[in-house]
Length: 547
Image 1 (cartoon, rainbow, N blue to C red):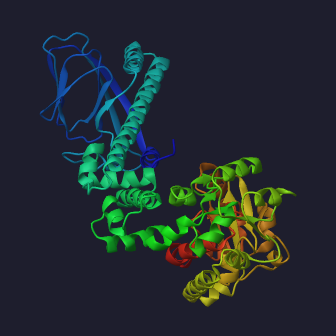
Image 2 (tube, one colour):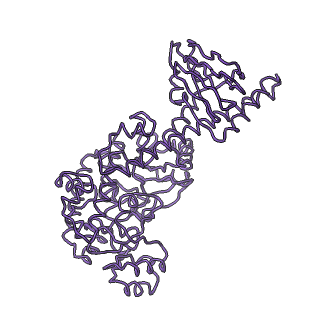
Image 3 (cartoon, helix red, strand yellow):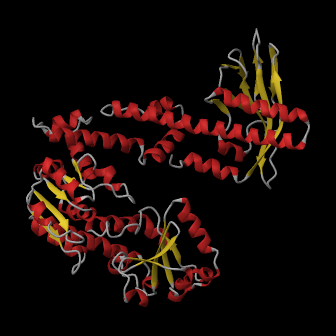
């Protein structure tokens, strides 16, 4: 499971807290007070049932106990155990939790700030229930024996218990978000209040909105909008053509004009253009071809949307791409024969001999030359083939205007010094070449280091020793978010060579956030991808660079 924001918050908190088991007791009386409002805010109770009866009262609220039930309470809470006919009773573990190196402030209620980050207080249900009792028995036996090894075994079992509990908390959150998502997908044409979805998920409004976006990659509102847009696209594709007003209403919008504006903003095409686009089926044979067609207001009928480094196309256009292509030529031919396009746009790069002829048996084919021209030339070739020359020139004109505005925002002193663009991917440190970094070098006029002018168009692995020979005045770097890449980046920054670089000593190292920069530049070498990259620079990354 992908590491969530909650995972990260817990991991961060664990780096700065200490935990100490103080004891365990088994309670079998009919009624017993367990907690009584201690002024210390670093004491906690871990309570679990040994049977299937009874309950506990926490601050006046009765909670039934069942196998697998776990309650974690702070000592500031009033806790009582009640069972008229006790059988096995309950286990109560007393533990302390506090912040390392910082004195805890004495308060009358509440938890230490570091402990609040864990959000550890609450009710949990752990499956299988027997696993809790096994750990509690180990703790009980080890605590009572008095031997040092047994006490250590008790501590280890206690930490396992907390791990099981936190895992249950994460699972509970995932399930709650799943319920809210299902409700949204079932009733997306209605206006569902966020508070109602948060209640269904069992979270506060703020925590729900933050967790939903982290889990599904978009806000609740954006997720509902995407569902509505996909429904509108489905209705547009039906044989029984509906009016724009009827489509808007069935998709959940009462105002057809507002729907049209929102559709164009979300999809990139006005509804009328989209309908015309659906009538003409174009196949984008490779990753880069998608980015050559979108600026021409052509959403492919068939395309590979399995980009491993970036799920943008998959998320945005999966509902539109009805024929999924791969990197297997025979598979692609069969898929295109089952749903023939009107034409196929491909690259001549690595195209096997005879493959064009086989594709031409299905539909007319354009092979865009990979070498000999840049991404602008690729766009114009595709435009000529699809009779979209005016659209191509209009898009390029707007791109150049945006690039000029971005250049004006970059201080001349920055652009007058050599700038080396680096990529950290996994355990590799890579230099980004002139062609891969064309948006930065050619459109934003970053100054190219002399060694880069002599070759290395794409990516080249480099050692930290080799990096020292470049001695750039500026470094712009993109670091992948995975653990290996982050560890490589951390290790790189600790080296003497890195610290001695002019850009580092001159405080001129700038991090590119957000966009998955340069992970597979061959697949992103297109007008649309470069437009996205330029927009990212202008809106966010540029501020980071100029920080």
